[in-house]
Amino acid sequence: MTGYQVTDPRTGEVLASYPSTPWTDAEKLIGEADAAYQDWRGLPAEDRAAILLRAAHLLRERSDELAAHASLEMGKPVASAAGEVGVVADIFEYYATAGPAMLATEAFTPMSGGAAEVRTEPVGLVLGVMPWNYPYYQLARLLAPNLLLGNAVMIKPAPACPRSAAALADVLREAGVPEHVSSVVLLDDADVARAIADPRVRGVSFTGSERVGRIIGETAGRHLKKAVLELGGSDPLLVLDTADAAATARTAYGSRLANMGQACNSPKRMIVTADAYDDFVAELVRLADAHAADPDLAPLASRAAAEQVGAQITRAVAQGATLHTGGLLSDVGAYVTPAVLTGVTPAMDLFTEEVFGPVLVVFRAETVDEAVDLANASPYGLGAAVFTADEQRAADVADRLDVGMVFVNCVEDSEPDLPFGGVKQSGFGRELGALGLLEFCNHKLVRRAAVS
Picture 1 (tube, helix red, strand yellow):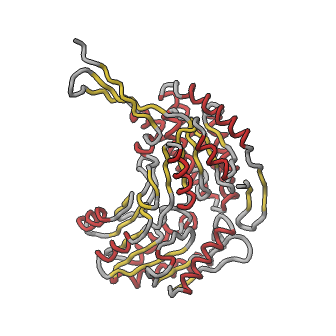
Picture 2: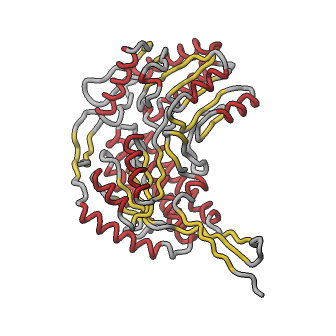
Picture 3: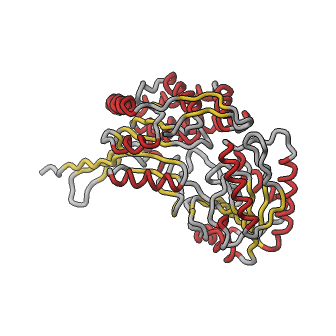
C-alpha cells in the first residue's frame, strides 16, 4: 500500500490522510481519460495553446494559495514555493506560445519523386508518476507539453503531496482543460504496474529513485510502452580556476542549498583545483554555520528523508571522511543543519551515492584531468557545472563530461526552453524544450505517389 498522507515536516504532525483510489475506480478513470483524449486531440493546436496560456495566467494569480499547499506538504519556505509556481507558469506559457510551431507538419519530396510529409501527432494517455521535491514543477514538465500535443495525462502524485496535485488540477480545469484529459489518481504502488499494463495507457513518465525507475522501466518495456525516466543524479561542479574562490563558493552554496539540497540537478559533488581548494572550503563552512543559525532554516520534506541524510553523513565519517561542520539532526521535525564533508574516497559509500539533502561534499583535484575523471567517476550522468575563465578549456571539458547537460560559468538551472535529462543511471528521455514536446508523439509519415 502507498498511503497518501500530509505530514508537516516542521513538527511531524499528520494533518490529513487520503484513501488510495481502488483499482476498479482507477480502471474506470483510465477509460474516461482515453475517451476524453479522442476529442481533445481533435482540437486545433492553437485552441489547446490558448487554454495553456489561460492556465499560466491563473497560476500567477493564485501563486500564494498554491505556494501554501507546497510549503505545508514538503516544508519549503512559502517564498520558495511561490517561485516554483512562477516557473510552472512560465512552462505553460512557453508551450502555449512556442509549441504550436514545433508541431508543424514537415513536407518534403522523396528521392523517388512524389510527395511526403511527417506529421507530429499525439499517442494517447500518458501516466505520470511524480516525486515530492517540486510538487508543481515536476508535474508541469509532463503536463504542459503533452496537453499542447493533444495527449491526455493522468498524474499519480507523491504520497506526501496530494493537495498540491489536486490544486494544480483545479487550475487546469478552470483554464479549460476538459475533465479527464488531465486527471489525478491516488494509485497504490502495486496498481501503478497495472496502469502501465493497461493498453489504453500509451506511455509513462517517472521521476524518482533509480530503484523504482528500474521497476517502472522494466514494466513499461514488458508492455512495449514508451518511458521517460529521470532518476536523479550526483552532479559535479568543477572549479578549474577562479579569481575569487570565496565568491565562487557562495555561488555553489546557493545552488546546492536550493530546496535544502533536495533537487536531482543540485551540485552534490564539488571538485576544486588545488589553488582554490582551501579558500573554497573555508567559505562553505562559514556559510553553513551562518545558515544553521538562521531561525528560518527549512526542514527536509520528511523525517525519513532527514534520517537518511543523517545516516549517510554518519557512515561517511565512520569510513574516514572529514566533517567540517553541520549534519545535526533535530529531535523534532525533519531538520538537518548544512554539512560540509571532505576526504571522501572511492572506497566510501558516499563516493557513489546521491545525497538528497543539505550536504556539501568537496573534492580536491591537482589537475584538470583529475577533475574530469572525478566528475565522470559516478554511476549518474544528469548534469554538471564548469567554472573557468578559459573558454577553450571549458569547451574541452564540456566535451569530456559524461552527462546530459553542461553549464559553463553558471550553476545548473531549469528553463522552459532548455531540454532536461541525463545519461547512465540518471535515466533517459528529455523534458522541457522542443525535445520534451516530442517524447510521447507519433511521427506519422504520409507518402503520396507521383502523379503519372
